[in-house]
Length: 300
Image (cartoon, rainbow, N blue to C red):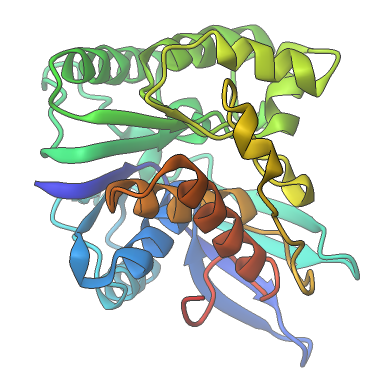
């Protein structure tokens, strides 16, 4: 059984370098989480990544990178009719990002799209996905995956971890996004939302309104990410006294939330208490925002 099964879309990342040229690496929200979680677990757990890529040179290069990170890629499907998605990224002096995407025809959009094949996932203690995972899928595939996850969670076969990671341009409409993500919050055992995403999607007037909504959920674990303010866990007032030191420097905020999720989940898998999980997530994110790109050259 895997410690963590992460599923979604990985893309080739094209980044401007200091010499005015470009560098190619690989990233994607659930892939970033998979990499950082495997780094944190080291030999104490195995992370698998599930996606669909092409047979193009960039897809082959990604396979090599994933294997070098120690990820299990045996559940990655190759599509001869599609390629891996691509995006470019540039950052300003404050580490804020701007993106351009070439992903409309990416192979990952075909995840679980064959209605004649039942959805099955390999056994894992935690099965992790995001709103982006769901947004890129066809409506039918999305529904089949969610029904499968709900059944597996109810049967006690896996814990479902979810981050809404709301990206409006990927969804058919805001209404669809709200309906799907609301349903996923009902399925999730481990909730890892970001305050900004939740307020944007559900038009809530304050952070307190978001916290109160998640306080009503029946989660085994919940961490609401709030950037430099540090995460908060509803119904745990004692944790408010935790100290979440700010990052020493902010170079690039890419993968801040993804790396938080990784640190948090690795600590959870190790049996740490809620305070330790929050601190582990925050520490991982604080490190990652201090280096360029989604995937740092080495672990914190």
